Length: 157
Image 1 (cartoon, one colour):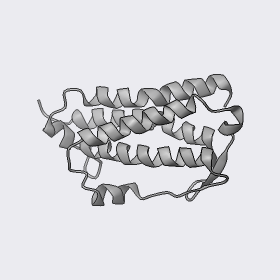
Image 2 (image 1 turned 30 degrees about the vertical axis):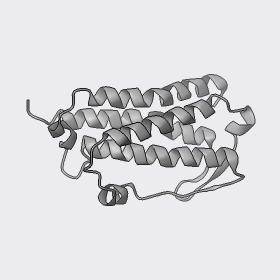
Image 3 (image 1 turned 30 degrees about the horizontal axis):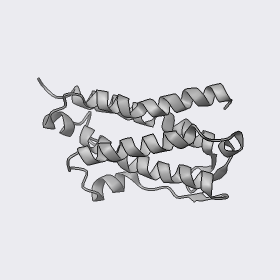
Image 4 (image 1 turned 90 degrees about the vertical axis):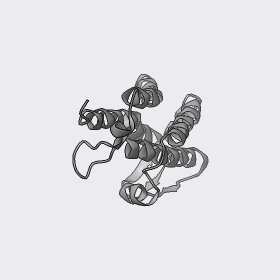
């Protein structure tokens, strides 16, 4: 990515929290627990996933910058959803998601050209550099915000 593309990607990444909050605006407990379809995550589960994913991605990003050739270990997101009590209240997970995004964005704005090229190996996806990391996470929250909207749309009013 060139500097202009990176700036656009960072701005989209920074906007992810807002997109999720907007999708959740006015959500009732029924909205939070509705599913788009059987087997899909509820909005509540999506929020907890975003917190877990964001905290994990923030550590991966930091390891890319601070360590030489780190191994970035994948995780089973469905197992997290099953075992980490994704039926709990969402407010702490929203706070964790927001904090991880904000602190990571601060660092993204400070990276040198050399730091953007730093890379490691993801256990599932192979070699990844900071641009690759951002390429995935720039839309992650937006995609889940749309999932929240679709799930909420299934609730009868």
